[in-house]
Figure 1: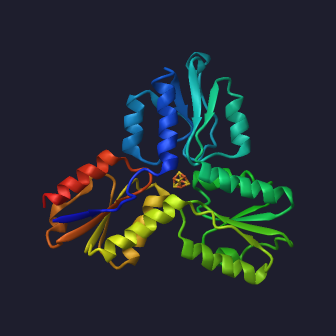
Figure 2: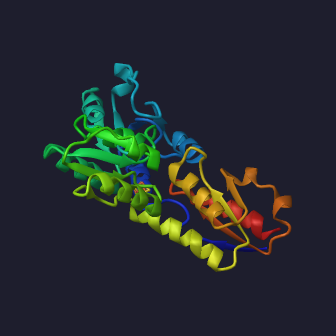
Figure 3: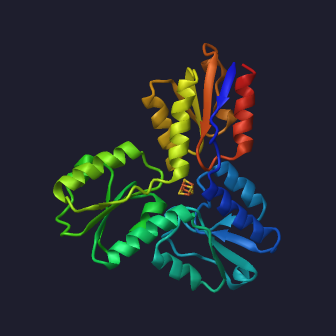
Length: 289
Ligand code: SF4
């Protein structure tokens, strides 16, 4: 079987950077590394990092208290993951009495900066995203209590009166066409709304590369990545929207070779937190069919 691998499949630069930061503390600086929630949304990569002394301690949404003894804090560093955190959480982590390193993706930092800048001028913030996702929870912390999360047209229509100043941004991993549709609906009510497309370049590149797989003749699409990874789930949805049979798997173990026997060309892509070793294994199994 011919396998076409999307050029952008796998780690985005924000994830790569967060992993490099954590590894540098664990190896060259010989520190115990704690991360506030999973550093990235990939179980297999977190297991690999765990074996290197990088340990997840906070909860998925970065809300719970961190339980560490004084002995555990000695020679340890708290690393903030790529999704970022709220200012309150940052203050809390800084006051834990251990070293602190912020590995928030700079692209998420830009979104936080836009929200902060507008909130200070009195704007209400509307974020297009998943209210339970750690990135959105962190971003809401910059809205000075005037933030709203929307996921659908109905959510935009149900917004309470927001006053004259409204700013709309997006979680970094959403679809551009959905963001634009919701922004257009918001503008009907708030014609002066400031709308900033904050979907990151890495997300847009992965989405357009997936469409290219279909243009190159892929008869089915395999999307590799965590089932709780927002950008991977989006890729799987986009593949389905292309009208192609889509297989969202976490690792090669989830592959059923029988399901691929009727295809001559299969496209493979992977979420921004999927390590290369998993993508390589999946591609090699598919090529052998
Ligand atoms: S998906 Fe985008 S915003 Fe998220 S870590 Fe990667 S580059 Fe940064």
